[in-house]
Length: 377
Image 1 (cartoon, rainbow, N blue to C red):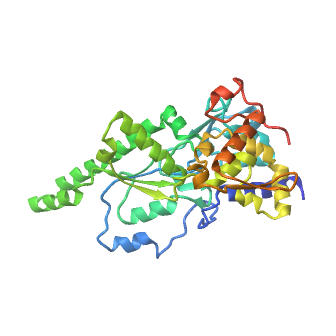
Image 2 (image 1 turned 135 degrees about the vertical axis):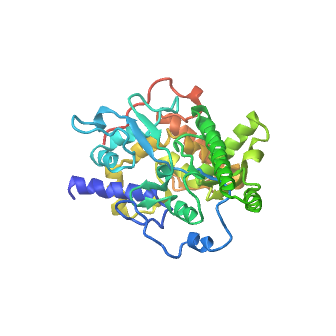
Image 3 (image 1 turned 180 degrees about the vertical axis):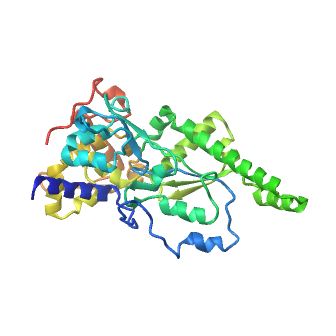
């Protein structure tokens, strides 16, 4: 196969693996949803269910758009720039096709500081559009927003609080994201109260004003739907804010809705950190696996994954008692070995340290120097 089509196939496979789980995605080229006349929002719009409490959505792993605010020379040219282009957008995916090493150097973090490496700046996009589509044609929250709009939600009482999904909850707290999430929740409550006050003022009779007050009663708290890794992030946030302002969660949060959250960890995180593989890549047909490994070497993927503290935070919890058979291995001598969560954690840590890409978060064990560039293809 020619070089460009080969790279294109590999990029498409990588995108499919990253977006695995969003099987209902409608592959429209412009990212516009196909109208669904049987969607739940239309049904509930005819019932007594109405927009009352504000909603602040917290997305999961990979699903907040990251923008390029600083790029390396390998990704720029004298004609065009990737400034404020999304890392999963068309422009940067073209960089992935042309130079995978350069692309992954933008995605990787500094293993000592958990921040951008020198010359690179990726920042989260803001607003509802930052989490509705992870890439053109692949929706994440777009359908949820559409259905919430059916029952009366607008940007005044519906918000998104995206974050850098490469960071662990501890690193997110250090980066200031928890302060921003706290502000987002408090602002959503203020906006909802302001809309209520406007509705009261628009009603002339006292009985109508009392009816509006009764409808709004108990609505001074938000609903926080969380998806995937976002569940662990919000759990960390609630512990963080309660340590500083006891009772804050009870006063401001009505409910947290867990949508496929990684409460007890994720086995795929162990596989990604150990070998740069997911179960999805391991079961690919041999010809496709060779295409992926040729254009996107596994050592390059592993090098990048191990700099993301979020994957370490998603390792299965509960030790060997909770995960007694997490990984099955075959030794050189042909012996079959089963490792639980504890054994896998030690194996990953040893592999990370031996590969000159130390375990993020244990900085005392890491060499105090910049990470080496990924190996050339």
